[in-house]
Image (cartoon, rainbow, N blue to C red; front, side, top):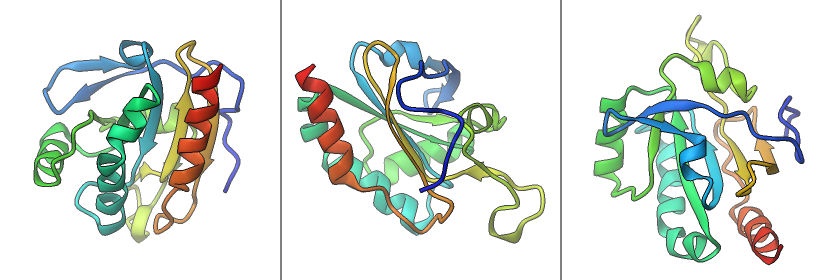
Length: 162
């Protein structure tokens, strides 16, 4: 895991991104619950598909822990919508096509796959509680690594007790 400028205990930076419904979605719109922000490099890639489907399959459990999963990638809303439909993803996918939020959260991966100038999100997870405080951070330099889903659930369980 690598360091990011976003630290546990600090207020999560707010943002507004376009959803697959072509409408703006802000972090604050979801803070009636704990939020699992899942940044992923790209729709339709094998590891990203596996990760988003794992969240889909765990959604009932995560919802019982009063958590809302939000996927964020640099894909456009059309690609994310097709990705969500193909994989029956039942949580919001937000589009950071301007790369503003990946920079804000310090998870921009530049020159991805050797493509000069192509920036995507590093695979990363931020858990933000209802007060907007960051409670968990996981960022990977290796796009092939998936997050520790049990750690995510455990963190949500701990937050649910407070």
